[in-house]
Image (cartoon, rainbow, N blue to C red; front, top):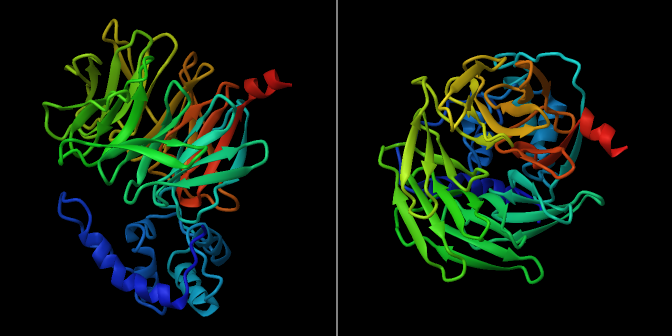
Length: 425
């Protein structure tokens, strides 16, 4: 299932990319692609890279030497069958995009120790994301660009990947109370689950044609599934027993509902990725109460709920993290170490700390905020021999470790904090 590009396929990328771009869902007018520097290899890079992702990712990267560009590109496509074109591409990238420090993070030293363990998923270019641990210790994940979900056995390092219906492009994978893996059809307006034994999927299409981009998923204790739509500005609920689906629009336009979680009392919470708010949702009626956040620049990608009920969130637009006490209404924020442009993203509350990443930086650092002392410590997240991101969601395991990922390199990474490592001995 690896992605191999022959000379014919490389040439075809020039033709297919405009067609693929035209087939995207309607939205704001697309920005003009960046002008890459002239030079031998430019056309190959533009045609090949743009067929899968925005060209802006190249000049926005931290840059690499030739060997590191080769390694990074190798996680996306297999060019080994076309050595001349591979050399032309690598020569161009290395000459025009060498290592730079434009987005270097401010890494904060400290005494808290962690270890990182990496696994690379099989299909190239799949953009691995959102790993989640199952009851048997296996790890499910979504390969968004590969249109798949997969299951990793962390003991053996072996992974099995399951293709999804065309154009599902799963944004996440979540486990229901029965342990079944559910996926969000972020491109085709669907939600569904996979039977690992047969490889067959059960799919529910959304009843409203506007509800195209199913995003993040949460389950209540009864097995009802709730989900967000970022661009459709909706929240939905599905009864898997009879397929009944209810969708509601968020009253304020461009709220962009993103993350979704239940608190211990059964209240549903949703983040706003385009406005300074969190949404408190009644799971029975889907009535929505907006909780305003204080800073106008605030946008919230993800959040987590601590055992004491405190909601910890990333202020992605402001380069901060924050906390909301739902009972008292108290809100407090702290600036992330790398500042206003750090764009915090995934977040987990674990063992007295708030863990998150600064996705606007290169490399993409993992940050720990100690709740008791209100101090930070951070580590650059490595992918093999390169530092290439990014982390978009984080989950915790029953062993007290942290599951993260690096989409550009198809990696799942387990982060073991020092206390969890000591307890396991």
